[in-house]
Image (cartoon, rainbow, N blue to C red; front, side, top):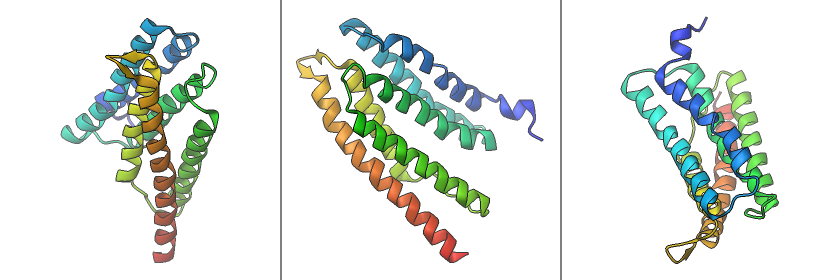
Length: 186
C-alpha cells in the first residue's frame, strides 16, 4: 500500500501543479492577442521548468516514487499535447503534427505497458527527453506567435517543431526497438 506521505511528497506535488496549468491554457488560448500570448508562453515555460525541478528534488532528496515515475511523463504529455491541441483552432500549429505526436505518445505508452506486464521496465530514453525539451521550446515560440525583438516567433517555432517531430518519430521507433530487444533477450 502506498502511503499518503509517499504520494504527496514535494516532487509529486510539483508534478500535480504542472498539470493544474492546463485549465488556464484552455482559457487563455481561446483567443490570445499579443499581450496574452506572452503571458501564456510565460506560464507554459514556468510549468515546463517544474518538470526539471520535480526530478531534481526526487533524486536529491531520494523521494523517487512509483507514482512519480508514472505521473511525471504523463504530466509532460498532458501539458505539451494540450497546448498543441489548443493551438490548432487558432492556426498556430498544423493538426497533422499534433496527431502524429499524440499517436506516438499513445504507442509508446502501450509499449511501456506491455513491457511492464512482462516484468520489463523501459526507462525514458535520452531521445524522449530531447523530444520533450524540443517540443517545449517549439510550443513556447508558437504560443508567443507574434514578432518579438524583430524575430518572427511563429516561424522559429515551426522550424523547431519540425525538428521536434523528427525526434518524436525517431524516439518512438527507439522505444519499439528497446521492447523488441527486451522480449528477445527474455
